[in-house]
Image (cartoon, rainbow, N blue to C red; front, side, top):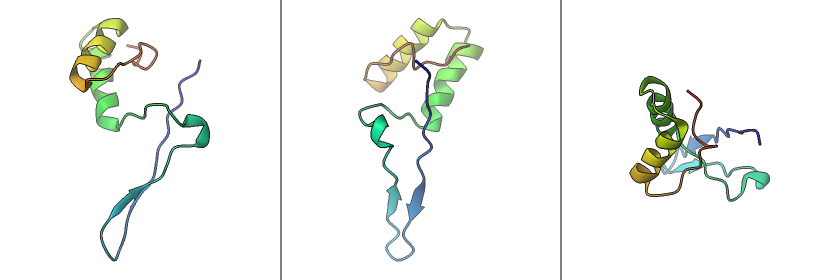
Length: 76
């Protein structure tokens, strides 16, 4: 299965300052959407840290407190 990344636009209201983020596509409902900092940390661990994908996913799971699939981890 191919990985798909969704960039969800965020906008700040000029009147009240509230930030609103767009909802993911209907087909993406239920999928986890990681922010750029989480993706960067996983890439750093897998490539620069020279860690296997399985170990990277396990460490990210420990840090985030939620399961992370090895299919979600970046390739080194």
